[in-house]
Amino acid sequence: MTVVPLKGIRRTAARRMVTAWEAPVFHLGVEVDMTRALEVKEHQPGATVTDVLLVACAESLREHPGVNAHYGEESVTLLDEINLGLAVATDAGLMVPVVHGADALGLAGVAERRRDVATRAREGALGMADVTGGSFTVSNLGMMGIDRFDAILNVPQVAILAVGSTRQRQVWNDGDPQWRPIAELTLTCDHRALDGATGAAFLASVRQRVESPW
Image 1 (tube, rainbow, N blue to C red):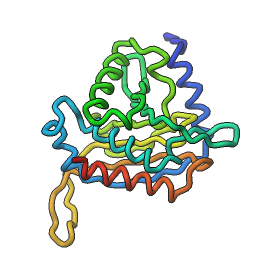
Image 2: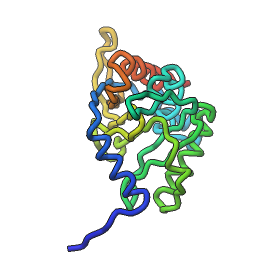
Image 3: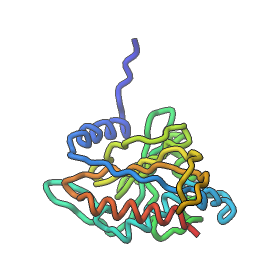
C-alpha cells in the first residue's frame, strides 16, 4: 500500500471539491449541432473545437453577466473580467488552468493561450497565477468518449459547462431528416446565485454561437 499525500494545487482542489459538493446545484442540458464548429481548422489553423466552445462561452458570459460570478458569504459578486478555466487531465491529476481575458482574445488568441496553459499543465509547469482568477470553467471529456456528464462546480464560481462527445444522430430538420454531428452540453449551476431562466438563457446563447461561429 502506498499513501500519496496531496500537496499544493491538488490539495487546494480537493478542499474546494468538498465545498462544491455542499452547494445546491441544478443541471441544464442541450444538444448542439457541431457541423460548423468542426470546420474550425478551415477558419483558424491550429484551433480546435474546444477553442470554439471557449469563445462561445466568453461571448455568452458578456451577454449574461450573472453567470460570470462568484458566490460567497451569502452574496454574489459579478466579475468584470471573463477568465475561463479549462479542466485538463494530467499525470498528476486534474488541473484547471485559466485563460484570462478570454472575451478580448478572439479565436486565434484563445487557441494560442489554451495550447500554452494546457501544455504547461501536463508538464507540471503551472504557477499560481495560471490557476487563479477564473470566473467560469469548461470541462470537455468528449475526446475521451464520454457522451454526457455533470461537472462539479469550481467554487466560488457559480457555473461550469460539461461537454460530451460528438456523435452522428438523425435530426428532424423541419421534416427533412438528416444525420448531423451532435454534442451534449450540460451546465451545472449554483442555485444560490442562478435561477433556471438565467442558466437556460446562457446555455441557449452558447448553443447559438457554437452552431453559427463564423
